[in-house]
Image (cartoon, rainbow, N blue to C red; front, top):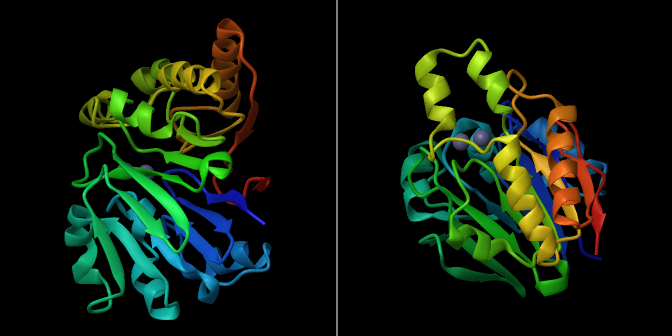
Length: 257
Ligand SMILES: [Zn+2]
Ligand SMILES: [Zn+2]
């Protein structure tokens, strides 16, 4: 059985799980191992069952559990060369790993994984489109914009996890210091609701059936604003999709293929 779910989403930690045949793939490890174990247990899995750990980039909300996780499992670390260079000093020496330049396509067991560069303030940051065509999940968070290359890499994925980080008005009028606001709004920061909603409508025109709204800011967004933005964009484009929110702490309902 092939299925996917997010395990945590937001600046306090990100992780997701994709199970396909013999491959048990964790995408990002930004919560502690106890938390990840308790979520995986609900799926009948443990960290010892993981075959691969894919990392999008080196920010702590995506890698904080990695040093301990690699000690407790034989999972192969999968990340870009630049991400590895940024995190290697904290990891056990010489972990089993697959390194790549974003843009390359990998084969993990029999599971194809397309990698693509995201625009973010971490070297080698990337996203992933995991799985065979009708079981493909694209994971696209922590990017300041969606380039033509990103769209090309994720289009046609049946499920897409897409960042709906902030409402622009809430961010502009909110409590963050001005330089941080500029960083988030830049094209190396995070996606706004309005931008992500337009991308989501484009994806649904290309066959995406399930959208999972992810990495919502606790300070600069509200779930109903993200949901309103996406439903307005889908309606305008005259397309439909099942829309889910990735909870900050806890898993989303698994998507079964
Ligand atoms: Zn993040
Ligand atoms: Zn980040």
